[in-house]
Image 1 (spheres, helix red, strand yellow):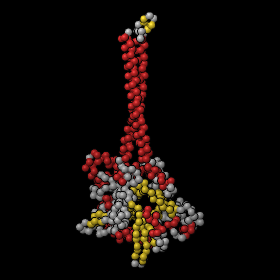
Image 2 (cartoon, helix red, strand yellow):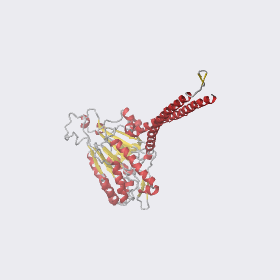
Image 3 (cartoon, one colour):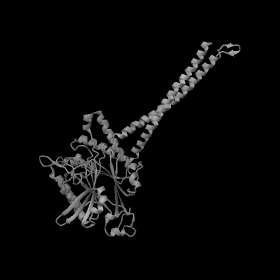
Image 4 (cartoon, one colour):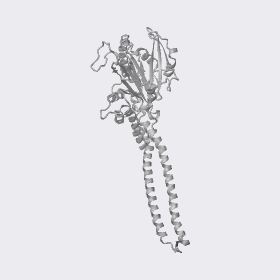
Length: 486
């Protein structure tokens, strides 16, 4: 009788022990599930950020009404500096993986704005790369061609789906400063990416112009008023002396021709595109006004254009906006130009950070528009991963109010609205961390589901086994005085 009780209790204890152990498994599964839920929320949030970052980065400006429902939207990317064989020779397979990841990083930034499948609407009308497409001007032809093919994969349109115009500027890492710039390097670059000096015109459609008598083409584009001129210049040989003075003369002949056209009509909106920013005093930007020369007095390195070249651009070309690269940290400056004596070319120029200028402009400006004007210069922060994959969006539109009187006064500055927004992405390692966590989460959810299913099936099978053993054991219990002995 004693043995039978022990046997019966042993079977029951086995079942209890299984239940306890299974409870531990279920508890662990619950903890694992909660962990997956917590990390899954983090991963989902960051995945959404990565996929929708152009919309989210402009959300504040949209809510505050700063962004424009503009007909012209220009996307700026600066200094991608695509690397190549030098990294592979130093790092081997790690370098190859890094280059591939970097190409994907740039391609994601680009397609997030321009792809027809992107939620960013309306898409840019122009995309402008502000120089330093590659990381070195000293690469050979074979390496140059390899980087060109990678560049075209990043910024290409294999299915002819994009509607924007792509404009490439040359930078010091593409053809060198004037010490390293040669006809061969310039020709090699121009063969793939177009001229280093040219003018691109952007005609704008009239939104409201009921009584205007000027002729328009069939698309409603005004052929005279409102055409913005993008002045693309090879800034690396503006300053001299240069090793190849013929190349430098080409740049200055181009600038002189633009100035001659400018002097016919100072009301037309000009936008200068230059890889190297204009001169400005130290402290306004991260890069200070620095120029170094080699033993032959050729420019070895420069952060800004010289004061004389900058003055020529501001006072003769008189652009409304300047967009530059080169300073990877980025900068936003407003130049105030006052005419002291136009005949003697005497001007007073002072520069301010744009945010400070906007706060104090009533104190800074005299109000004499005839002898005073402003030029805003935006140095776009680098698109490289170490600088957060930044892009810049510049929007132009005509004002919604009646513009006939404005056109009659030939005051184009009042006719248009402009807005610039910085659109940062994330540091280049963040997308890969999120991707790895996403994969872990997916695998984790699958394993967790399988674990719970197997646990429940095993629990049910063990319970049935114990029930059968329990019934078979109780059927063999002896009976004493008509009662079962337990």
